[in-house]
Amino acid sequence: MDSKIIELAKQILANTNSVDEFLRSNELPQPSFGVDGPVDFGIGSAEVGSLRLSTIEATIELQDLLLGPTMLLRPMYNGTSLQAIYKFGIVKYVPIHGEIAFTELAKLCDIYEPDLRRILRFAMYYYRCFRELRNGFVVHTATSRSIVERAGVEDTLVVIFDECWQSYARVYGDIPALRVPAHRLT
Image (spheres, rainbow, N blue to C red):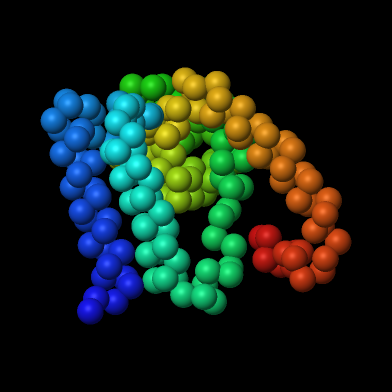
């Protein structure tokens, strides 16, 4: 009998093969974070949509099992880079089908260049938001492009960072254990 992680891996593979076959047979674009990658699947089939969601749930469960209970309790979500991208309007300064140097982008956004590099490299790694195809130059991905082209995506960031995070800070800000020591911020 297979372990739970092997069961999940097999389920993920089988479902992914079905979704891939559906995309190929219907000549739909393959998922990609490239700048011209689809921002939505556009899957009209309820069955394939269900397989896709089942696969997402299985990948989350597999990740959680591989992280283990202790690591799972540590907050993994860090939206600070996304907040900075939203607050400084970084997406609007990066050409959709081109590149821009960190140096120039930092000037346009009025951000200290080393900070901009850290912000964007974090977002590149964790959110696949932007890419650095060659050293020192930023290009869009489908993720960052969606912030530019889809009003609902930017609206979501507004709600998360201007409303939700502020509420969270008011509720939990006075709990000493949740405060980050000043020496950790530098």
